[in-house]
Length: 287
Image (cartoon, rainbow, N blue to C red; front, side, top):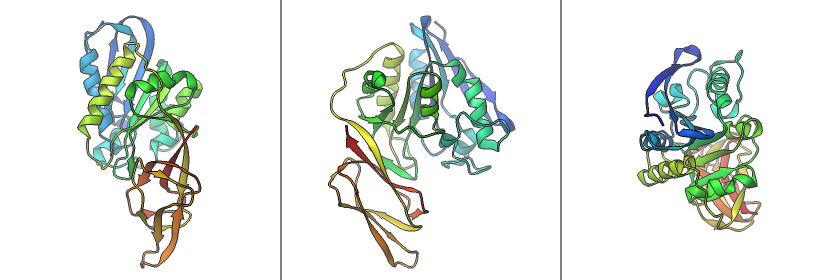
């Protein structure tokens, strides 16, 4: 067992981020806890800090590597993407040492931390851009009992190239992607729920899988313009229901956006401006 001792690690370009490693005192997996890959998501960093305080000096199997602010450049600016190159860090893993700042940073995170870990909990939130139903995402059926410890909606995360948790699951081991809160603020209840679940998982707990597991169907913008949501998170919708509208900037209606499928609204875009390809609504479809 070891007490928590934070240190500063410097990555490409000289930016520094806090890291803490804890030895649980007996053989077991190495957990990597990461958050703030997007800089406007605040529940995850605090959940990790609280988990570190609770695990410090506690006996558990394996080790923990805590990385509460994975993108300190974006976090300092309070924005989703890295300001230096506007890159989305969660789309470029395992990174590129010869790329711009964002892929360089992904390469450094992967080599320095992910390559030493067996399991990953990557905490996200809707930030300023999206409103999410709290979900615990996983990729393989074997990981569902661990994801169920969070008590959130269970979500089979899509196999998106470059996403940290997906690339980790392909290369290293069990990986979980959490979506907590929204609005660029910190939800205290979700932060506390996540911190307590992290401690339980690190100590080796699992939970029964109750309720449906949802797969994801994204509705993305076909045109640029001004988006207005007509749905709410957790809402059950039918095929053909209007989930939002898109207007030109002069106010002219471009189109009503209808769901092509029945399911549950797991996420929707909060920011009005949208470009072609931007996510508008995430529909969960029960498996």
